[in-house]
Image 1 (spheres, rainbow, N blue to C red):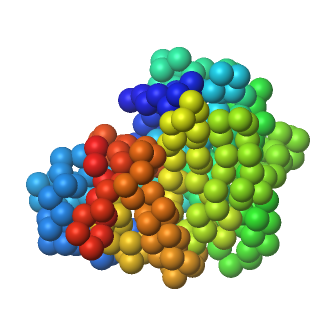
Image 2 (image 1 turned 120 degrees about the vertical axis):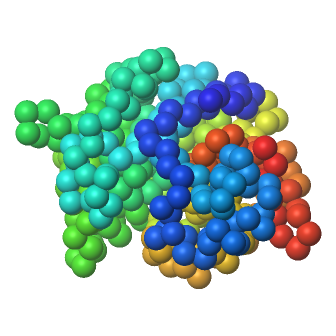
Length: 283
């Protein structure tokens, strides 16, 4: 799946897709509530009101950069909270290469935040050691995000994620800490979308008068577009997350900005429109 924004191309490469089993993440998204939103079918929910979600990366190609935004779950990782995310042996790197993006062709890795399903392929296991997956890349990580998770002592799951997917990059001298409003290049800039994590960012793309935004996790599923007050159980600051969604949806509704969802399955991208007293995604 591919989109063109002026001189920029965005390509989606999937690691894992799922239908149902997401109530742990969005408990308010009951089948009854989801079936009220007919526009979610077929891309974002099934006929029984079960959510469709995806874990994928986006490859963003500008005239002079090849950036991978978020690196999914990774293989061989341990101590993950979700059992089937442990000790994975998936073909993501082969799929990435088959799509035309071998690991050594990536010059920039951009992490919207440092949660488990966004940093996993930062590293791979070689002879018992975690080494950078993208050997020629600079890894861009939010300064606020990195400092926060480095200081947290009561999240054993995050300690494992930092140890196997973040710290090896820093120790290899391949990490660059960026601000939440950093300009990455002429076409790519970051905007703060805080709440899911303390340093969470979304990615703005602008080229030849066209615009797109890669969401990251300030919105996990399009049902939150209609219900911005629905928070996920993974949000660090749910109230701030709600305020961010309301602010961003008001800003984006009715504009030509293409919204590209980091966990949106199916069509994945669309434009935000006003729908009565709330919003929906037109794909």
